[in-house]
Image (cartoon, rainbow, N blue to C red; front, side, top):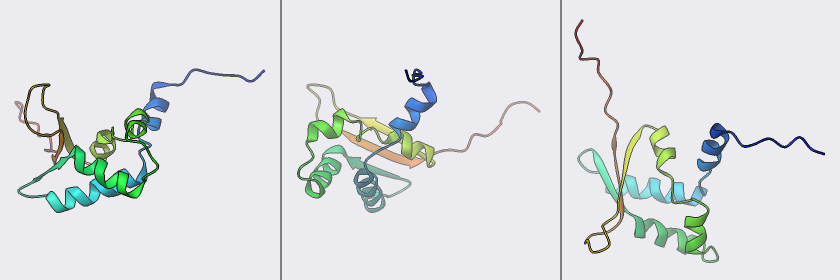
Length: 111
């Protein structure tokens, strides 16, 4: 019998960083095009639409179920501050990702 071990938290995080390469390319392109005044706001629907054009046999549900839209940690690891905003049920606006530069932490305490 094989020695089966539980997955570790580190292994789960590594699996979660395995995003479909087309998503990364699409987000890179949209961030580059939308970047103004230190930030880029990318609409979730634009990412999905571009992905579905490239991968028509891939279902939108699978895109979410497999976690490919959970790409924020990949970009945070690369140095971005990423915020996801989704309007409330009755709210207006579009679900979006806001990319900005991470601010460097400064030690402003007493010396």
